[in-house]
Image (cartoon, rainbow, N blue to C red; front, top):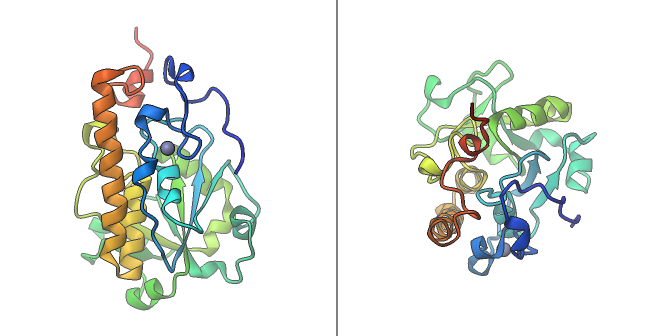
Length: 243
Ligand SMILES: [Zn+2]
């Protein structure tokens, strides 16, 4: 693992608080001891935009910690899927990327929560066969605009199967963080939905969502005790310049 980027958490006074070496959150916000390992058939690659600075509410590291083979990379661009992953991928078309373009699952003729689309944003024919063939998933971690930047800077993603989500439940973030992704889900919730559906194992979603719920519970507790570590306002409001 690379060393943590310095002084980028954006939280006042957080530097005085020890950080967990695993999730990189300030210790009071860490829920690592509750992380239960998940064995998954499908591999996970999480690409995090370097400006995704929300250590307090971010979920990329927490997601990756659940899986032995999950890879988390921080950066803007990589020359290929194999280079991003750190091992050779024979057929990138068997990897899926969670696509954040204009296509919305609600506009397509499907009630599925995980939907394969083509380059035109249309429903792919043979959903079941396509989803069954996927061996890995790329998740883009960041705000919608950061994730879009990652998409445009990594043209190898064009070779991957595009998936979009039509979650039947809103994000558990609630008011804490608005629209973290195009589909409204946190990275850990997106991983929960995609992997549980692709593997047909609801327990994957249960484990990841329980972890997320635990993280949010801890956050709300810390809000009361140490509000500087867990700001009340959503991050973007918090940082908005006031006149
Ligand atoms: Zn931790």
